[in-house]
Image 1 (cartoon, rainbow, N blue to C red):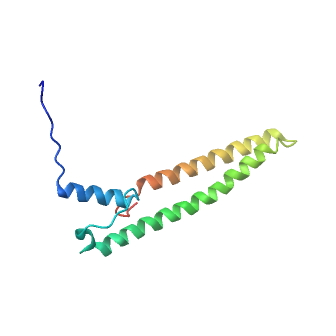
Image 2: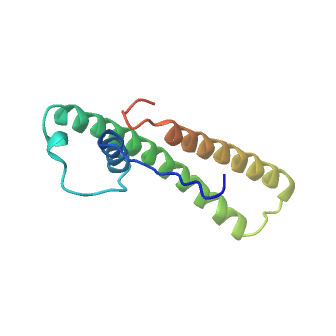
Image 3: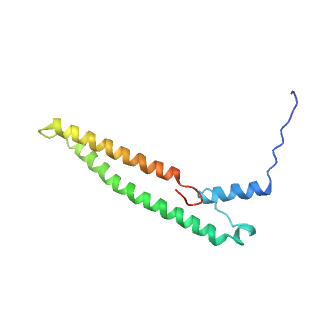
Length: 118
């Protein structure tokens, strides 16, 4: 319809929910609302701690894979050894494995829920 308007109304419940989502993802740092600091604050803190633990565990796994990536980069930059055929195939296989493992870690991070469940 010409001249029609849509009015978006943000309820207090929606604003609180959105704020919690942004805060849990580290995108919103502000003084907590009174409702947030009352009942449920310890439970929310525990959920955040659990998510942080899961993220740190995944970060450690990724750091280990990062070391493998650096080894592959160094071996590629050092040039082909005398038996380049077998070494190249091994390097390609290792690279595919590391890429698959990194993809799994990414999916693991993606599946983390703000409530702390994976």
